[in-house]
Length: 348
Image 1: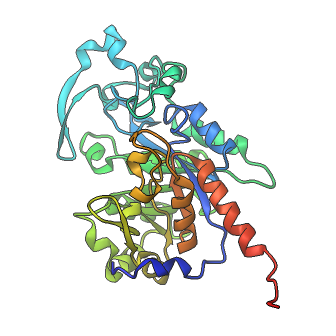
Image 2 (image 1 turned 90 degrees about the vertical axis):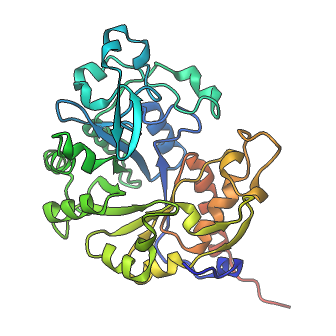
Image 3 (image 1 turned 180 degrees about the vertical axis):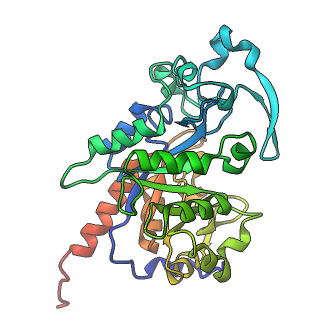
């Protein structure tokens, strides 16, 4: 995308109110992908909760960031599973640990979730082991139970490694399609939105679910192999099978090597022109993840000004923001809404 300079902040916003998506719940405050994290995200203002899904040996979709379990569960502390530790290559990366496809759902139920980034979020370790692994059906039930006549809550489900799971004899898109049907969640206005990095998985889902089926979103990495997707031609192609894109925030907010914000791209405009929504990921409140001018203090794990980053993206016209701290985006949205509704005072 072409750099347009910081002046683009003044671009007109779209009419639809942007949404707040709690990334893995509210992992700034609770271990990710736990009931506590999802519930807190909703309490903090999230309109959707984002959950990653992998597959068990018996074909059940469960909420974990990755199929290797040792970083997000206490599996290493279970001697009965010691012999299942192994090394394998997943999507070109060699990993050693315990993998979801080697466990049945009943076995995963015996594990406790733990904080995946204890060095960055040490306070979250106080909740280690308190919560278990949830299924897709359980997360859908959660968002339905928290929806009301005046506030709708939905699930944004990310499929992790679908092609790789297919090669293991666990056809992820087929399993998801069947489960969405069982849950009566296959409509575009239903309780579930699905996203994935792999275009083929989304194409398969569009064929299975139909043009009026569940909303689909194309995830896009910060840089590299997916660069072609953010060209005008690439965006038009995405529009043939998906309803939106979810690019890394660095595709929109351009940074120098030192973390300084140097400008913005025209990706939002180009995507909207192709009829796609734009939902950047992932906003995090710690200095480590913020542009240099929004960092506060010298501690990389200290809290910076995440609200201003959210406000900038919302002002640029994104349709949603995906964030680890939903309340920061919720407050930023409220600020912009209040400003937009404020009466215009005549000049004297």
